[in-house]
Image (tube, rainbow, N blue to C red; front, side):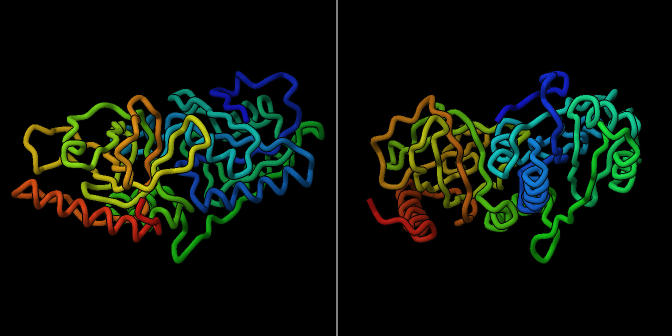
Length: 319
């Protein structure tokens, strides 16, 4: 899989392609339904499937004060798109100039000239071009009206899922409420945050529960302060994920902590040296909110209970 960060980077010999278009933040089950259809079209017609996404999120340019927190960064989005069936990913840099393109200009510059699309698959509610003037019907009509060697088909796929339509907004709403299980249902996997493990104040180690401290950018969605059951995996190889009890917050029992942290205790392991390791922490279920304990002893007792409940939720045995 290749991630091209601009259509200008595409090779001249790319050939005709099938293109699936969307923001794809989170690559949730609705996105995957569209990708599955695009994959079938590509296979039926012997085409390479290219996922076209946008970076940054268009809202960051059009209405920056309303920019949503991201469920994934671009690298993670590309990995998930590949896992969902895309052969390659193109990230169209979204700028004020890009936003000014008419629907016809977007189609000609990106789909026809750069991607040489023979088939295009989008979500049924897909809009594009200046003031979102383009829709699936216009896309299909434009593609059908081209010369034979540039003509493409276009179709829109409903983002059905559960009792509501799956969407990135729905996932963010779940996460903001601490409903990481609901977010995982819509995503088809636990919501994960990534980062490099850094040295913290090591209070967990002193209490017998050493934690991996992972700083997360404010632009990435993190569930509210509390304790969660989940998994942590290293991104540098094929090691099995570790079951973890995750603390999100400022650790109110101890004074002096100001920044929010994502700290993960690997169950029954005190021998791991994780500093400098890039990891992904996935949230499976919320255990409780964040509490300021009056004594260290009561905190340790609660942490032991958190570990027991985490083990039960994840179905792991005591090591």
